[in-house]
Length: 129
Image 1 (cartoon, rainbow, N blue to C red):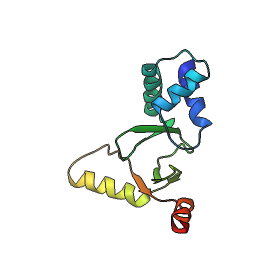
Image 2 (cartoon, helix red, strand yellow):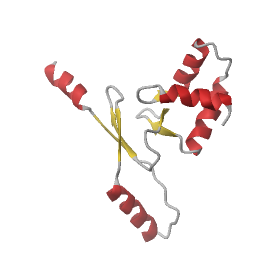
Image 3 (cartoon, one colour):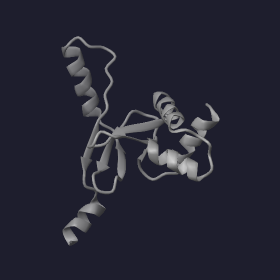
Image 4 (cartoon, rainbow, N blue to C red):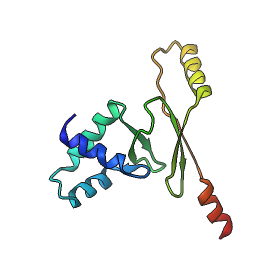
């Protein structure tokens, strides 16, 4: 792994929740790194391809990233208000994806599932206000 990829991954490892490429780039620049935004995107893509980081597409279509908490296949519950994310297993989703693929003659099935909602803390704040 390159030093730049290591630096990008290090930021994600020490971050709470998902971060955008622009946010990572801004932090690296403010920390004194001489890096371009294109290089940050390339590092993120390489880390995602290697399965070392999670990529999530937000409701507005932006890709955001975070270091994987687990090395196994998983899905996410994401709070729409604060961005809190919980990794969850989805064995029923796995079986469904394989069955749908097989029904249509597809093989080597992959998928990504994100479930959006409001976390307990944000729900409590909303109901108190």
